[in-house]
Image (tube, rainbow, N blue to C red; front, side):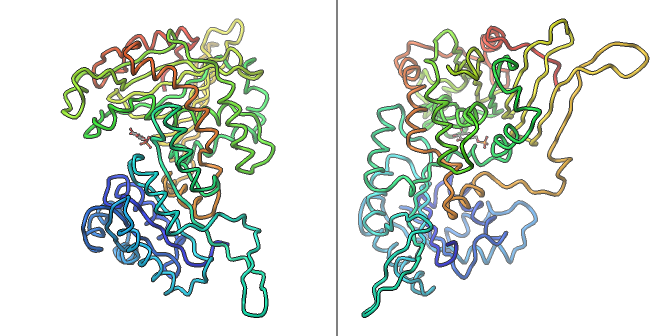
Length: 493
Ligand code: BG6
């Protein structure tokens, strides 16, 4: 049931992620009526000693998309209470427990019917200790929706579906390689059941990522073509036109492969490549994603180009001899009937010439046709769009051909529709108990299995990044790799 008392606890409430993403997402859910003030309370928890009002004023500036009415902002802020405490001692959690219990009591919540959502806006190093605290203070096991709980009254045993739960939302980095990720997974897994754990990958909350399965499996245009017989290569691209900007210390420990490719781009790849799931059930969808990951061939060093932008090491928190890539292009290969021989080119970089995330599906040549290949592009951001590059007769008296586009730009076609932020959608899914757009433990493990050997070679300095100019396309070697993998430049758009 989706009614009853709901406590949302944002751990790490004074940090950047909470301020910039979590609280604004909660606010948007509130103003759209998904969080009701008569049942929800939001608790911020962090080490910093500040008051409720201090936290509220820190968040306030991030809540505006420009047109909110002040009243809604104030109402929302009143739902937030702040508790300060450490992440590994009982003191703070006792206070938090008290605050939550008071809230639940004030809402007449029956024991066992409270819903508690713990959002970890925290560094992963504290995940295990925070999980232990939550487990000992707050845990209700996740029960299937149909589950019937026995509530004992003095004489009678009453059957009731109380629907209470405790769920935790965690975010990458989940470890640094296979071993450390597995260690973290088992530490959390000993305390919580998989249905209680929501591993966020915010790319799975993006509108056009959520559209991928519909697009592929509900359109005859794509069904028969989506395979090695027709598709020559697929690119999944992430570019940012700014550098690590104050996050150098964090970034240097991880690098672009762990920050973007192993999670965001790989998740997109799974949805592009997977077979049709048996049903729309989250488990069936995630089963198919795991199969794609398990069918990946090892990454070859000669199909990897790494880069590091000039000036990256000027950040005082980055070591002078850093070998961390801020750019990577690599070819992934799926060894199955549908995709054998089709390169999936993953490309991600910081401090490049533009900000863009897109999927480019390039079809094979049409024999005898010189004008250029068909390409289907799904632009995840900015300005969501899908377009197909086609060859058409050039309009006019002459009989020649030209490449043109069939274009579905969301801004034009769906004017006035506000596309929700990824975090908004994913938090709502968590409240509803829908794990479809979250990463399952075996998926995470399979993802690390693919990248760990390469990451270890980079960490050992065996594969080195090539310097590139900030604001450029990245190292020229990456474009060469692209061509080598079979990509043919079509006319720009
Ligand atoms: C985060 C990465 O997961 O995603 C950042 O840690 C990156 O480095 C960000 O900037 C990009 O997200 P988006 O939604 O802006 O593409």
